[in-house]
Image (cartoon, rainbow, N blue to C red):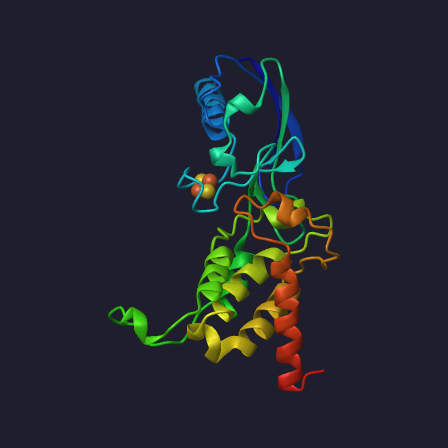
Length: 249
Ligand code: FES
């Protein structure tokens, strides 16, 4: 395949960015999108140019590091991570726009790399349990109803890639935050911090400058792990319960 790439290039956080156009040839339909970018970078390096900076790590769809807006869609045309997107989703001769996540709370560091440390700070605010660590406890010591276990697993699938924020017209982080709250709040192990967790994590999310949620649902549509939209309404319910019990309203 021969492709025309229009790629966002930006030297650093303070520089102005712009789209640059590149031609790549010899792209196999079996290559991943990141392997296609590797091919472009090999050519840029051989020509003595600065390669395109982009985030990646596992390349297996599990770490959440890869993060590209491809032709206007977070992670591109398939419901998967960028690293699991393959070039068979495109046609010979296509022009493809490649941009970083666009959100005020995710400033561009360089080219296609954005700073997602706001997510880390939301997790630090309450995405943990205070149960003592040590040897694995006897599994039957803390019974968990099957529906609660299934719900916890469903929310725990969030890999924190930030596609929900990138897809949201408001730049909201409600889907991410709700997944991280709900996966602990539905389990008995998460019960001791149930109220402080939701209050502190939502408070941190607001401090980080993410937009407000208007339930447009773009986040759930873009999520490569299928975190459902009702995760947000479940979090709102937890938040109302916590504020009432804390007498904060
Ligand atoms: S590089 Fe790990 S999910 Fe894509």
